[in-house]
Length: 149
Image 1: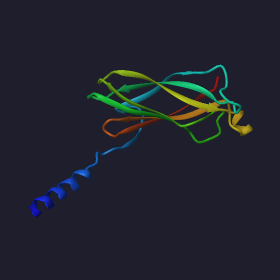
Image 2 (image 1 turned 135 degrees about the vertical axis):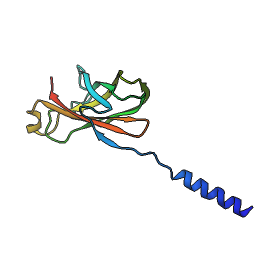
Image 3 (image 1 turned 180 degrees about the horizontal axis):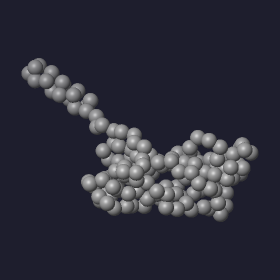
Image 4 (image 1 turned 30 degrees about the vertical axis):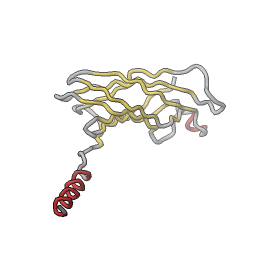
């Protein structure tokens, strides 16, 4: 009886230590998952006295692999540097399957505000990173930079 209990505890300990391999992969040509920014919706009015505005970034995720991929999360982070718009980190939890060779568009709501630095305000550029996390634990990240309109 004690030997059986000990064996169960050992098996339980082994099972709890099982982890899936996960990787953070920089996206690019030939990647299993590619990401493009399809659109950024700009609001008309600030939501607070710091000039914070709500934006919606439409992100197109393409499954270039030979298997169905499930997107679990999309995160948007500010790139380091002097940009005309500073974005707060935003994340959206998902459970969306994308068939092999297909695309899917996701909308992620973010908040952004003009920076305090006059130098950054004069750049008229925005920079952010989009990370797509799959159900297998792999994450693909892409950096985007462009003009603020």
